[in-house]
Image (cartoon, rainbow, N blue to C red):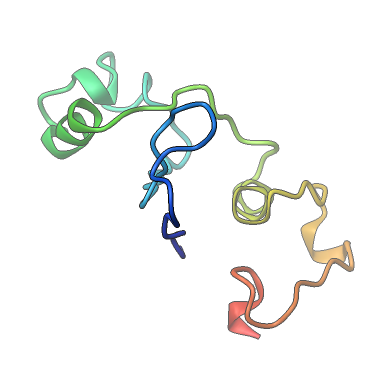
Length: 104
């Protein structure tokens, strides 16, 4: 995904540092608490890389899919637009060169 480069002041009006990168890890059909059996993924020794990333950076745990199956969730995550559950028959189009229209 493209990243925005901070310009000028490295902080916004609220004093929060600007972000150079955002990593999104999507757990298909699981959340961070149901992955790896009874242990959550962030507490599980079988997931050392996920644990290390969470400890070094940050976790935003209150994100959820908008629908089932997965395709509407992926489209909503990328576009910020809820296009409905019948994604093949919506008539939505995205401009060439956009993140979603990149394969056009």
